[in-house]
Length: 95
Image 1 (cartoon, rainbow, N blue to C red):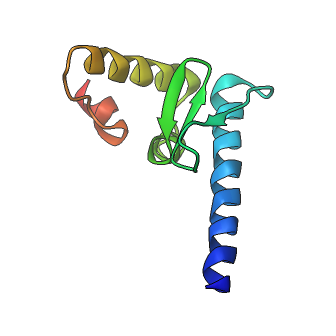
Image 2 (cartoon, rainbow, N blue to C red):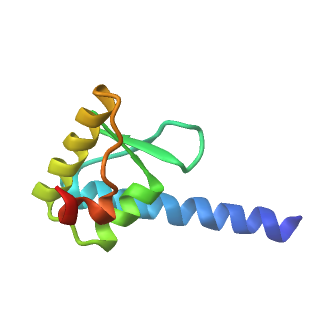
């Protein structure tokens, strides 16, 4: 169990580092994030919410700041319309 607890601490630290890199890249070097779920699943930055998967996909797919905000706003619009948004990985191809 001790190894598991150490692994969880390391995982949380890595997730927090990824979230900070993401926030800095897309919101500026002084941006900060807040984990809203009491863990390392969803963050909020400014008025936006991002899952760990979203952050990884935006950075892995090398979205520019403009593209990230375009896709994030598109996803919000889809949610208001009760529609399913294209995934981050497919958005560029299907928009």
